[in-house]
Length: 380
Image (cartoon, rainbow, N blue to C red; front, side, top):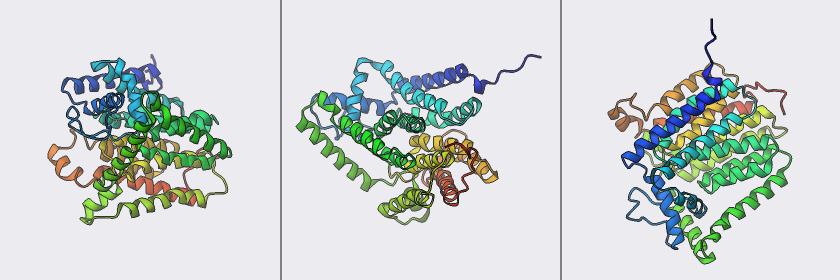
């Protein structure tokens, strides 16, 4: 009897599946003109070319203002060469296949497990693609940063991590990984060098005075944004469940303390298992403590959750939390739940944030106790 092929190990199947997923979502969004974020990104480059303020609302981008770095606006100059659907589709492909390549390259997992991870996170990825945002790109860059760090390619690793900072500022948290490796000075120098290069890249298009104004405006817009939003995060969940306006700085400061606490408690050495599990907690932390977190950004947290589950020992508690995360994180935006239930309960009460919060707490406790379910105890 002919053996049934295992599609999880078939790179061609997964590649075609991801390609068709991107194409179907992108075409649907393009036909109904629901790709406003891409228009905002692309227009930011035109605004930069004509020395206009990047951080104000323009009539052609009614949905929202540009909130990314001037370097990100500079980067979108590449898409000036791709009109209409072609540019939009390339942007969606970049968000998808950088993450695809990152998952395929992670160490310590077999091909079948990587294929299963790709299938699981594709549900959440579809949500991000439906909003034409950069979250898939950020998730891919973070994982590639980890891969390069584990391979001791710190030049490339710091490049990937610093890239996330110039897309969305919270990526800077991932530089905590420098504590894991003895080459700390090299990592710091590479990070500073890449940071300086990316700060100055827009000078290939604009004057120094205009660029300085851009960075001032960006900083002011981030400050204004911080004061107005709680997001689908711990802050948003506490506020919606209790009705009390909680202090974002206090919650985020507490989050920082608990983020660093495992590093201090386990400071005598960070083996492979610790590094991987801690990294997955960082991917979740970046979202649940982010005052601007929204449903499409959870591809970053869900990637961290999937990696945590398959790198862990997978005890019964882990299995239950992971199964609930798939339902409560990835499936809440879908038609599995009635629209009225989503609008009146799931979204107002930030239910999407609940399971990532619980999983992050579980990971943090395991790391503090040295019980992160080590399945690679001998790998350094």
